[in-house]
Length: 532
Image: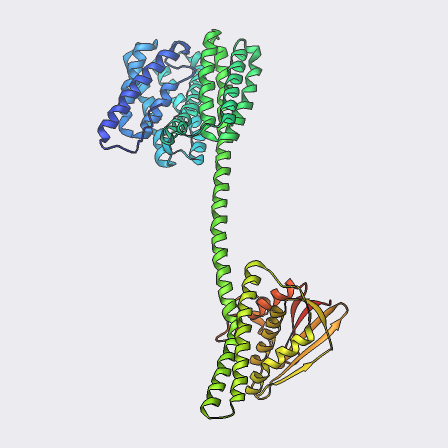
């Protein structure tokens, strides 16, 4: 169908309207000539009405086509139907054109249905509203014929039912199929590489449908064979979506018309097959719409996951940068202090051996900072931890010794209670940084001059526990639940990465990090690792 030809290039709307009008008239009169011999009660009502479906689609393009639709309907009545009362024709066709004008406006303006851009929700609107619109229009149209004496009262109900099924069935097939043709023309899938399996699947489905339709149309008692058409229609809709399903339904409708004419099926039986066709259309298009919605949802989910992966990657990169800044701040501060001390010693003319010792310490801290950066990069980015034999007692003692100067500057008492050798396996640098973070936090948390920090190492069954206890204000209640969340801190210049990294280090060594309040005030953090 070319009624919905909203091509991209439309420099002259009047020329496009003229083209649509000419194509509509040709298709309208051709459709009437084909289906007129299936009219009911010597009226213009046929058991399949593609002409009325064409009228609705044309008016959906523009309501200004309504007068053309009315003229085409009147002309077709005089040319093909048995109605010769001019007044009856004008009255009946005016009500018909007005009714379909209303249906087209409801679909286009009320629900935003565009044939060339039909979405799943548009398809649902078409399948729901066209049967209702056909029923209302059928009542008005048949009532008009009855009022002017062109339709016997005894024929009103069967004529109305035939009108309803014929119009609803035609619109349910032609509107989705026209949209599918327009979209296929725009995307030109035949230019792509044809998948042999898909082509074979479609060919088998067409052959199967043709066979089933011709066998079922031979005799009304064989109509149950028509139910077999549901299988390929549903499979096509499930595999290719609603557009392929709509085109397949159009093929079934055309094949059914040919088969019924070939077998000279009477109109009374014709209506039964049209009802089956309508049910098939609703089922196939509903499944196709569901498949398209599922595919669109899956595509959106993949896009969201890709976006989330990018955000996660940026967050990880930021975490690495922040963690490196956090962890190397201490050795950099030590390097600066040792270098300043060496400079002062050299400027004062003091013994050069003391200045040299300070520079050696600065060199040692620089190497430690480099090692921290390398290990932290692998740790955060890859999750790697070295597995080497180590003694936690030695590591804790080194940490306490490194922080002794910082504790003295604040007047804080720093005590280490050792439990003796504590053999384990793990990453020396990572554990040193984790325990160092706990000690630094404790020193900074306690009050100057009266603060006390106690570091204790002890064995508990097959675990080694390093606890850091202080007499500071303790952890605020409002942050206790998110204490180990990254970037959660109460320090004015803190980054909130020390505790999360320490807990992660403990977890990757097969242990953990826990917080316990101290009575009457203070906090205790305990880091556990397995005993070697």
